[in-house]
Length: 452
Image (cartoon, rainbow, N blue to C red; front, top):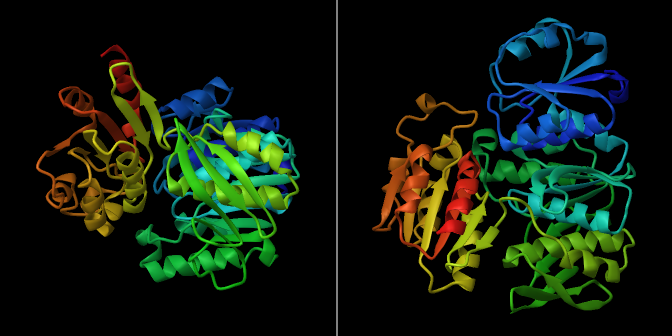
């Protein structure tokens, strides 16, 4: 294969994906011609087009495609897309066609790569590491799985010495990376359509950990067995790096941070949840090892605004609270629910949840039912299929899942009816949660609650 920099044109098949769009922005920022296809126009594709990237939404071989020459065009695709005429055209005409993970791996070969992996927590942690790098003015680029509230993007270029990447375990993509530094936040069972069972996903993470050349540049949450020496991190228990003395004063959270040799008190942190302090702990550990002083890190931690759809919270004059979150696994939903119940134990909680994938709904149905039963009332949206087909998962529906939920007040809704259903409900806190297209409810809900 030719060196990436020698290609002039980059065509993205599935450009609207969060990981694909970060790569598209990288090559666009590098002065290359970037164009692509996606099946749906979203906020993200609209943003890409406003930045000058050409996107189509129909599977048609148009003149823009036929004018591309295979000698100077690289085609990048996501395995989430199974069948597409455009992809067939490129393959039949012998263009260089690579998975997104392979291309990201090639980029990391030429940088000091900081890769953040885990079935939960990797987006927040990689975004926070990137934010700290930016505040410390390190020469880095980042490729994130969420939209940073500080950057307003999932990509930032501030130099090329370091790369910060979210290391995706789906399809074993993270094994394409060349990490110099790595974090493993969690190894819970997920993506069982790929791995089969929990033991195989744990083996995948061990293979990822083995890619890191230096034991002291691998950071693993305490309690995870990764099969090689590493540094550990934790909250409220002693580890190589840990935080404790968590407390809340007003709307701000405080914690103390411990390294193997010193204690730094009174970090200010606005993002709720113990799990998020855990993410902050490992981010601080890495930046400390990169030589960044704690005065800089304290200021940077204090002004971290989080990630869109990661516990995005709004409080309204009428007293109502609206929280939007990307959680799509029972462990993640439990973390969100725990934070809400900790800070607002007496408030009535309405949850609108959109399951993501038939396979995940099937594999974790009992876990979903248990976590969703912590709400006071539930609106369960139809399952978002993404790359899957209902015909391959007979009987796996939202109605089937709803039967397992122990609440009295519960119902199934289509996405198109959900907003009107929400408006009829009595609640103190509204939580919309899921990884599909439930985010289309966000703007209408915010507008409605601001006028209510």
